Image (cartoon, rainbow, N blue to C red):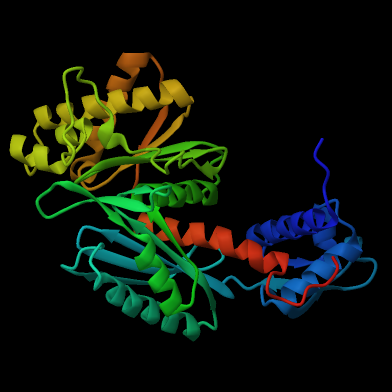
Length: 382
């Protein structure tokens, strides 16, 4: 049996109270005690600590005790903009940056385009300008920026510290990213995480389900566009895999004679990636043949995933899906049921800036834990 140290219990108590305040942002100390098994003394210390670090403030209001009896209770308000993170989405030549608060709400967004590829040395300078712009926006709301999450449309290998991206010749090449990220960290003086765009998007989709009251622990989010990929949530956590390559669906193959070349894309992407679809179909017309072609391959992919992981919630998105979302959705559902006789919950994503939002949420999850655990602050013995 695992033994717990006092600091483990202290951090767990703070996390419990923080989560309660996220969903019920105005409470008195006694009300927090009533919602938990934590003593009033401990709750009082944690609330005072949260005041010190700026997460809470007393509203100046008070409430009567239970049944109108007892002392009046001071009410504390959750300050959702006290801490923020910056999320940056880099897909093709389009860049989206968002400022995200503790409730995972976007409080500012900035969109731009560039011809400079992510792996070029000059890209860092452009990112620095975008980050400084978002930091200036954060200062307008008196927000502390905790860090930066960057979502990129490339396959990231965390062991090799490489990212596989398409070049202008539509071939794949590995680039080392560690030096670039370290240089950017040193320049902007903030922690940075780099994540695959679909992984980040899956985190945003999962949080959106939670905010809408959908009870789920697992999710697969599949996007179709220039490439094809998936983000996988298992037990409410992003599943990255050994090399952070979980969800690289472009390499899924249903052709026993296929052979991949070193710089070519994978089999599935060679079939339903935008390049092949544009060469094969008129996407502006939305022919039944095109929709059928896409949905069959997509249904085979979904069937393979859910037959192994037993995940019931699947969200599909990406610019190819959004050309004719209803038709692709219904056709894909039909084929999945045909292949399996199962009826998983498949839906289409309409969430804006999901990669940028998800990257910001990932950074928020990492850094807010340091704030509420007292790292870098004069901690009390709670």
